[in-house]
Amino acid sequence: MTEAKRQYRNIEESQVIITQLMLPSHSNFSGKIHGGHILNLMDQIAFACASKHSGYYCVTASVNKVDFLNPIEVGELVTLKASINYTGRTSMVVGLRVISENIRTGNIKHCNSSYFTMVAKDENGKSAPVPGIILTNKEEIRRFARSIVRQQQGRNRTSKFSSKTFKIEDYIGLFEGSNSKIEIKEN
Image (cartoon, rainbow, N blue to C red; front, side, top):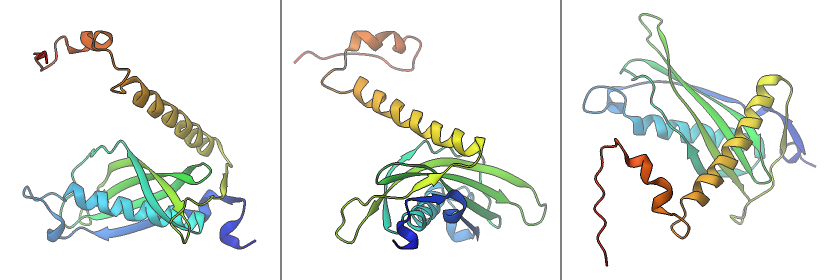
């Protein structure tokens, strides 16, 4: 069995950290770093981490909750850290953390945390089994458990709001005080 195809791997073996200087070409119209540029970097590091863990090229299956917490300025160093939080049969949840550092002041800001679900693909484009992870401390166990709960909640959300089973009367109370107006047109 090759090194990449082992049954279980330590989390540290596939962690990836990249740091990049933010240039004016990365900025939006307000002079801040464009969110799309940061998302692109996040996808790249999630790919690198998942591929390093699995020994296969990986594709992004989903991205869970991307909140831009603090703006990133031109001239700051952005560091992205990626780690495997969860492994399924062919998928992995990669936890990402984005921080920026002002080179002149040394001020460090947490800018984003997110979770990318990545799926390993073999040479034929079929989903490939991935090694599991060895959990060695309370934080790693917490992250793995959190990923399981997040997946279960996602399945619940999907089934509750299926167009075939959705009932307006079950949710009409949510609209009270909202910035919406309901005008249902009969067909």
